[in-house]
Length: 471
Ligand code: SF4
Ligand code: SF4
Image (cartoon, rainbow, N blue to C red; front, side, top):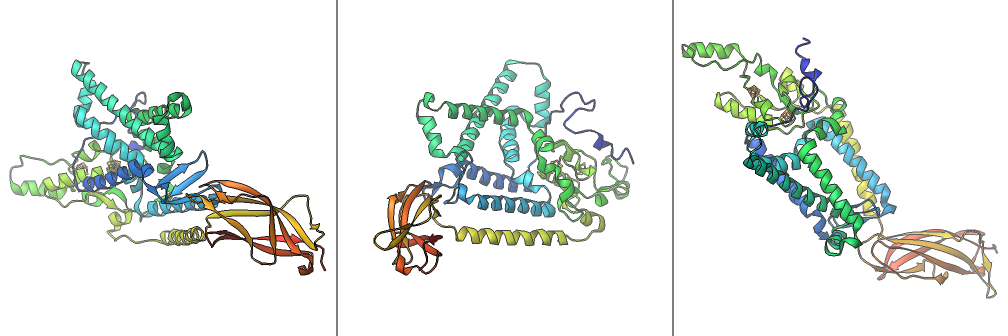
């Protein structure tokens, strides 16, 4: 029994004596799932590469400017005042990932995560073009240095640096905006020293990750992989080996004396012919036949590999497939448990709340407060005034001209400091008196409403208090 679990005593990416890293040379196998994964990856790569350069309502499709705390998603601009929406959005994203993981395991890692997409679909692909497939690469690395090896290694790393440089630029375009990135590119370096350093620092970081650190990001650094233990249960669909069908595994014995003997031999064994192809294609170097493991990023390469073997030996596909433990053990179909319904209900509620908050979000955010340290001023013309400070933020991607108008026509405004136009994303402060006839005032403290109007449209209604000696 202890022997059966001995694979847990070591990690696949470190050699058995624990001294050296076990460099991965995964073999490449074409298959149906890889074809679908290719389509998904290409779509996501195009989205990533074009995202900062597509404009909707004058704003980047996606902008994550954490430095200036300004975010844009599909034409909607979010400023620091919308931080609660951002927090809610993040919460929804986390719960969505949790629900998805409970049902489909770590498929996000293998199919959607940028680390895997760049590593497996871009960098490894280039490596295969230059150095050949897994086994060839291993031999190439172990061979002595020749002019050919020097040329290929230099070419590979130069292309890796170039792609890292492109990723770095795109990444910065998401953070500082594509317009600022173009400024850094166009203008002299002396005017953008920090931006220039940032581009090369990120280039170095991406190169290090994709050329050297590689799968260790998923197996050692990424906290999401470590959450699997608490998120997965026996109903979760994960990349799994059907041990009921596959065991006892055994090599395909050729040269049997008769067809009956060969058939008897197969009948005595399970469908796994112990060819090891599923291990050879695994980018994290694990043997999925040992069961669900933290290192499995659900890339589905082993499914394609095993399917190709099953085709050759004329056995049904999906000895390795997307299956739950209950499906394998009890041969029962997938069923959603109470936990899934619970998470899904919370998700629906949070999405509804977010939708409601986004819809009632105003173009201008206004805060009006009575000036500190003042009460009211009784004027000689029989009116009473209160002094106010207002702070306005334009949350749209276009300039807005506006006026502040009291809802009650008998209430007047006298500006001390007025601004009637706000640039995109800008904020301003205005100081003004609100004036009312003393004869209209019935109590010491009353509410007044002010409308922020632009092009005859009320952008926002704000309520504040007005104090005056009561009649
Ligand atoms: S690829 Fe399939 S048949 Fe070959 S070892 Fe893996 S599970 Fe067994
Ligand atoms: S076990 Fe299969 S799905 Fe998991 S990482 Fe390895 S090849 Fe990918």
